Amino acid sequence: MSQGKFYKKIVCIGAGYVGGPTMTVIANKCPDYKVTVVDISQPRIDAWNSDNLPIFEPGLKDRVERSRGKNLFFSTEVDKEIDEADIIFVSVNTPTKTFGEGAGKAADLQFVEKTARRIKEISRSNKIVIEKSTLPVRSAETLEKILHSGKNSVQFEILSNPEFMAEGTGINDMENPDRILIGSKDTPSGLAARDELVKIYAHWVPKEKVLTTNLWSSELSKLVSNAFLAQRISSINSISAVCEATEADVQEVAYSVGKDSRIGEKFLMAGVGFGGSCFRKDILNLVYLCEHYQLNEVAEFWKQVVTINDYQIERFVKRILRSMFNTLVGKKIAVFGFAFKPDTGDTRDTPAISICRRLLEEKAQLSITDPHALENAKKDLAGLAGVEFEPDPYKAVKGAHCIASLTAWKQFQKLDYQKIFDAMEKPAFIFDGRNHLDHQKLFDIGFNVYPVGKPALLHF
Ligand code: NAD
Ligand code: UGA
Image 1 (cartoon, protein in one colour):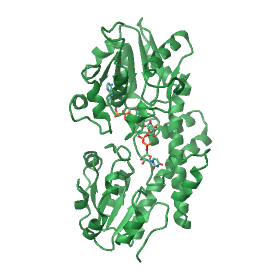
Image 2 (cartoon, helix red, strand yellow):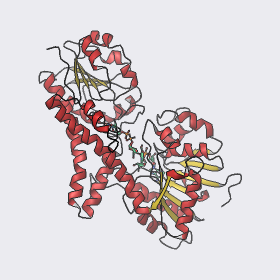
Image 3 (cartoon, protein in one colour):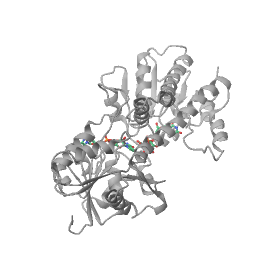
Image 4 (tube, helix red, strand yellow):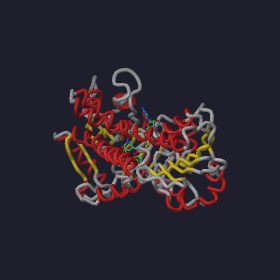
């Protein structure tokens, strides 16, 4: 289909954490393509069209402003944009199912299926439909069945092109990816569609970084990548418990182990556990897949990654309780960080939610501070008594018995901890759930310091 001054027209369905940033980078890098991101949520689209973008991601605003109104558009006109598109990315949410069969494990595919039905209904010309969302293996088969059902002469070619960016570093991850993965059918039309997508990435990604596989390998590789990353975190977190029992230091262990080039240094930071919208969801999805194929031992193996993550969160809460003389009733705890990681306002499945709920069960009073996640935190803890949200960390610590550090924001590393110590009840405790603060300095000021997986530094 000719698109006037543009070579091709791309539409992305779903203007979330993935759809918005990925399409912005494609628009930046490919001025010869018209890129439109559509969503059913009017407020989300309004925000993408404003100065106040719906998500906080370093470098994103500048990239959006570079292309918006030129070859990058945000719209709620889903049907019109589908009709005009040559290439459709599907980037809708695929949360864990909360009801019926597979509840708590399987992916909830209702948004993907609705999108596929809409594409089928509206399309009057051939299209390439690309899975950008993370989907269960063999989803392309389901999409194909829906798209080619009934009496429609339109041809759809389905590709899998999972996204590997991480929040907080999303722009760099997309501009300089480790790899781009494209799964396609091994048919002439499948390979031609694949080549169209390769052409887009060729605008900025070196050829050797574009990997092409069959559809099922591509879909499975996305789940396995997240499972491997999360597995490393659970591995080191399990060792942090051993360190606390033996007075070994988990950072020294991680460093020594990671220096083996076969193991590598990344994703070995012990902490309060992984969060985010995807690790738990995608591992559970993998577990569900294994159970479906009656690979029960394999399912059990991957389930342990989630079990250790939950254990780590509970261990952190118990450590606070035990260290603070076995009662938190009426004690004020300043929570430093609520986002699931720094440089994002995203709080989906953040360990902070479970930790705060558990501390409230112990009848602590919480004052939560975070540079970008307080609005989401308010929603996550809505209706719970004993919690306040305070943008200023110096106010959050006033009269507090302890600080629970849950997100490694740089801003927290630069605070004046003498001033903070002076404002707190004594003895003052700090539990560094991300091992990112200067523990010796805090101890010298007078804090009792509890890192993760290291000996505590105590004044008594
Ligand atoms: P999100 O919830 O932020 O965004 C999804 C968007 O899709 C929402 O704005 C929603 O309104 C919209 N939507 C739902 N149904 C729609 C429909 N029928 N028509 C139009 N719009 C519709 O989700 P996200 O974080 O962007 O994740 C999207 C997918 O990408 C998921 O499968 C996720 O696993 C995967 N993924 C996410 C990340 C990440 O960092 N967040 C990274 C890699 C992959
Ligand atoms: C993760 C993957 O890194 C991306 O490749 C993937 O595309 C994405 O999931 C997805 O599919 O959604 P993300 O969740 O945004 O990205 O962020 P990560 O940097 O992976 O961090 C996830 C969690 O693990 C955070 O809570 C972080 O604090 C924690 N983490 C990370 C650790 O506890 N230790 C580490 O060493 C690394």
